[in-house]
Amino acid sequence: ASYLPASAAGDFGAGAQVIVQIEDRTRDKALLQTRSDFVANASHELRTPLASILGYIETLQGHARDDPEARELFLGIMMTQASRMKRLVDDLMSLSRIEMNAHVRPEARIDLYATASDSAAALYPLASRNDVLLQIELPQDGAGAEVFGDHDQLAQVMVNLIDNAIKYGGSGKKVRVAAAEPDTRYPGCLGVSVIDEGPGIAREHIPRLTERFFRVNPSQSKDMGGTGLGLAITKHILARHQGAVDIRSRVGEGSRFTLWIPRAPEAADDAADGEEPH
Ligand code: ADP
Image 1 (tube, helix red, strand yellow):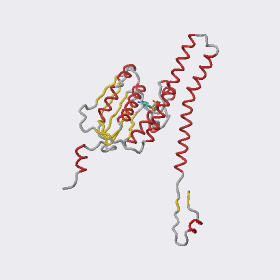
Image 2 (cartoon, rainbow, N blue to C red):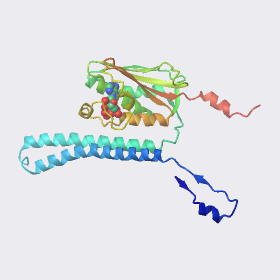
Image 3 (cartoon, helix red, strand yellow):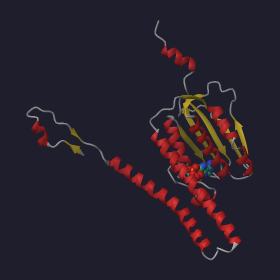
Image 4 (tube, rainbow, N blue to C red):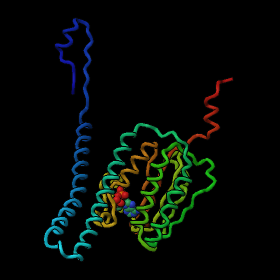
């Protein structure tokens, strides 16, 4: 707690008002803890591939120097590890940029279904490489599907969700990207769902999925090139849009990730709001 010492009141004479400010620092402490956990996790995530690269450099400078086969193999591994570090740094920078702009509301009118559809279409090649059938079921006319948004950030959310559905859904399966039915829990919002036929997620893990670096199966995520930050980034982007990500899943029955964003009022309504009363 911070407060004005009693003697300070005395300086202003009798009848002076003393402002006593009592703050609850519990939240500050929790925030500091979260920050320091985050730095520790991020450092650990970067340190592991870095240590591996350093190890291979040493080997290449030593006994593998004149072995062309080993050189090729080790260079390949170093490339994989360095790419992993680059993805992590890119995601960390993304997170910090989004946090910096968290209080700036996006003002551009965006056709949500068209943005979702374009982002999904860009992932057809990834889907086919993974033997996944990607189905896009979004209305094409765009009528009334506008939100106030940041186009690149919303595209990033779609890519994160669809990329996960392809990765974790499993090969030979289907991934659907569809307009969500209106939901009373998200009144006045537009929704887009990404639905997979994968193994699903246990109930106790669902609330933790949007935590930074939380993974249900860390080695599986890392093998697939995951950074553990995609859903944390998704959550922050949607918060900035005053929206949310809703996760429904049952083990053995696949998962449905739905992004919800408040619908922008019709452009005609905006104009009407600005008119002088007659
Ligand atoms: P990652 O880089 O590990 O994919 P994310 O933040 O995108 O990080 O996701 C966090 C974790 O949530 C993943 O590691 C995975 O365990 C789980 N997850 C995300 N999407 C799905 C999905 N469609 N099906 C099953 N598990 C998922």
